[in-house]
Length: 462
Image (tube, rainbow, N blue to C red; front, side):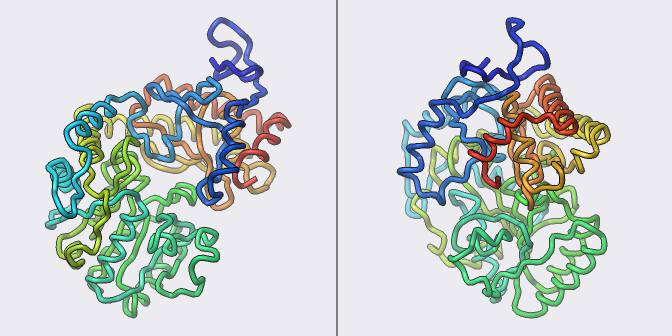
């Protein structure tokens, strides 16, 4: 239970020592607010947007603890990154390798850790084509590597991507992303090297977008960059048949299909790769975030050998690629996921959670408009009197009840439910119960004024 006065945690009626729950949360507490004040003085504003103003200080199991001692059940996973929860033992894997040698500058001197990781990634990547990897540090630079390889392979500079996609904040990944504000004042909005089409969520949209892609691939565009489930846009999935027809079209034009699995990969969707549900093989897969379960920054572009090797020696060298401790942790992450059967666990428990969330939708249709996703990447589209930002308010109220979720979507109207693969059955029940409680409050118009006040003070999009 939290130590902050006036901020009690999850439950209905009573918790712990039968103490009544005070539903009117006050997080961020004084310690978190102190951090925020200093942050504004010393950190560039481009590095921070903020969910709740809460400074996280510790993690245990699947639980988060903030700087004021308040506890939360984690259903956000540090933006889909902390795949194995907390205190998983991976910190010791990192320590042991760093004690041997902390860095080799892989571009000049290889190490066995990176090679072992590369082999494991090739083993779990779909398709029978010969593949290679390009190491990086973030999903952003993995995307850069893929776009660069596609340009060299095809001889065409144009890339087709999609509105409201998010691929990163670096040279190619930022202009490829479909939220215009991310590139505002940095990249020419009329730059035709990256064209954004509607993400095809309907049958009519699918057919129209495929026609548009066909025209572009017949011209100066040599690659298509797509998320198998759009993440930041609000867990949006393409209409049935889109990927198979896209794959055929890309092959016919000798173009390159790049599937961004930064959020969806590493088993989060209930498969190693979300695109496996579509039964197609990509030319390049991007993986980051959960690759090292949050213990180290590392990313990989896994692709067909001829596409990856279109780049010249040295064209994708960074000082820290193939970093031995990071590679050791990522390799062990794959082992843990496989040995503990966490992909199957996430798929099954995700189905159960989604079924219960759909029951909440039926009970409160005026609040929960839609439930989307697969495995442990789920989104609830919510409504609050038709105004933008409904998910901000919903998520804020959930946090006050001890459930740490996120929010995103085109109109900040989707609650982000992305727990660690280690989530337990009873924790899933707890999470769904809180979501039901918040939906009920919102339906009755009983969200406290203080909740809205804190959302406006500390949450992006309000």
